[in-house]
Image 1 (cartoon, helix red, strand yellow):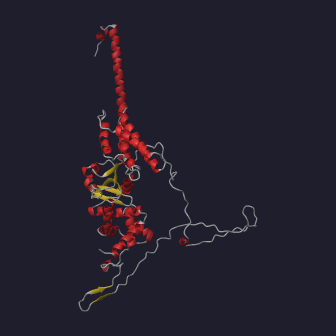
Image 2 (tube, one colour):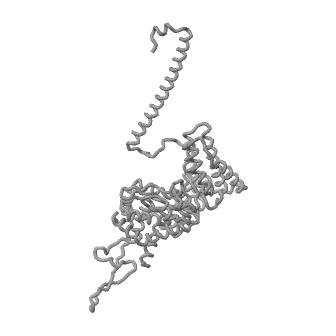
Image 3 (cartoon, one colour):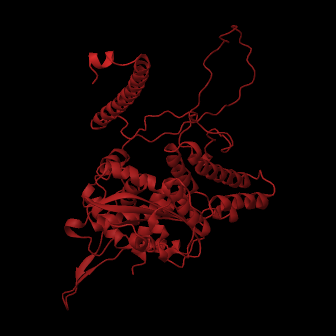
Length: 476
C-alpha cells in the first residue's frame, strides 16, 4: 500500500501509469462483483426451487417452461374424418316416446294452416337405473351315497367346480372377476377401488382380497399359460419395440420392461435389466428388427447379431444437451449431425405420406453425408468425441439409419414401447407396485393379456371370460 510520501516522490508520468493500473484493477473487480452477484442470484433461484419441490404441489413433474407453439385441443387436420354419433341399430332401441306438436296455432303468426306432418328422430343412450339386479344361478346338484362302498356321488356341471360346496358354495362368476381384472390391469384402476366401482355399477359385493387371490391363482393357470404363449410369440414377430421403466418388488428396486409387436404387448418385471433379461423375450438369434433407446443392455455382445434401430429422437435430445454446453466452433459437429438426422426423419415421414419422389436417391445422399460426419477421427471437444464414438459405432452396425433402408418395416423411434409403458408409470404413482414375486408375475400375465386384447380390437372383459371358460371346459 502506497503512503502519502511514496505518492509525493512519484513523477507525473509514474502517477499517470499508476492511475491507469488502478483503473484496470477496479474494472476487473467490478466484473468479479457482477459475476458473483449473478451466481448468487442463480443459487438463490435454485434454493427457492428446491424448497418449493420439497413441499406438495399441483404439478411436481412440471418443467416450468411454456411451449413456444402449443398444440390446439381437439382433432388435428388429416387425422381421420370427423363423424357425429350415428343412429342406433333398430334392435338396440329399448324405448320409444312419441312427441306430438302441442300448439294449435303458429306461435309466430297465429295461423292454423299447417302443412303435412312428418317424424324426426332424436336418440338418447343412457345407463339403466342402478344398480341392475345381479344374475344369481342356483345349481340344484343331486348328491347320494353308494350303499355298497360308502362313496358319495355328486352331479357334475361345467359351470360348477368339484370343490364348490359347503362354505365356498357361493362363488362369483367369470364375468364379475373378468370385469374386476380388466378394470385393474386393463384400465389402471387401483385394486382397492375396484370393489367399490363394481358395487356401484352392478350391486355385487366383492373384496379386494378375493380379486387378488383369483389373479394369483389364474396367473398360475390359464392366464399364465396364455402369457407364456405371448412371450414365445414375440421371437417370431417381424419387429419388436422395447423400453423399460422403474418398478418395485417388496420395496426393492426392479424394472418393468415392455415389448410390443404388431400383434401383441408383453410385459416383464425383473430385479435387473441386463441383456440376459432382454434375451428372455428377444433371443440372440431373433430374425426381426428390435427398436430400442440407447440403453446399454441392448448393446451387449450377446445381441450383436440382432438387427436394431436406435430411437433417433433420443439421439437428437442427447445432441441438444451437448449443444447447451457448447459455444463457438465446437457447436458445428452437433448442429450438422442434428440437421442431417432431422432431414432423415422428414424424408421417412414424407415417404409414408406418399409425398416423395426418388426416395432411394435422397436416402442414399443422407446416408453418405452422415457417413462423412461420423467418420472415425479425433475431435477437440470431449463431448463431441463421445458422441462421435458412440453414434459412429451404432451407424457402422447399421443401427442408426436402418429405417431409411427398410422404411416399410423399421421405424425411427421406439415410441410404441414408451406408450405401452405409460400405464405402468401411472400405476407406479398410485400403488406400491408389487409386494412379492407372485404379484409381479400376476401383473405381467394379466397386463400382457389385457393389453394384447385391446391391441387386437377385442373387449378385455369378453376376452378374459372366453379364456376362463375355455380353461374350465378344457382342463389340462
